[in-house]
Image (cartoon, rainbow, N blue to C red; front, side, top):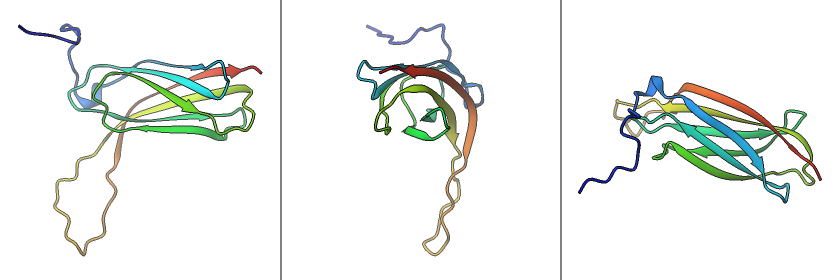
Length: 130
């Protein structure tokens, strides 16, 4: 018996064609936590991402990293660092792949951080009212 957990008509795409399908942020009733919903197109290679939440002045008040996700639909709960959160906030996501390093590194060589290959981004705003 075959079991399929994904839509067979939704074909996985190569890294340069992966896109964000949905990105939204919803505050929890306590006003200190934010539920993030992120959906990307099905992929052949696992993407990574970075989610940030900024206050009205542009200060980053929360961030999270997604490392090579296995699922195209993700839900995260992020905690705001503000002492008393209120007002308008902006959530942003950057979707990327890590460039593979092909050369073997010797012990005496300087390690080079792999480069991010950016493929898509999205933003959304939400408000916290106390």
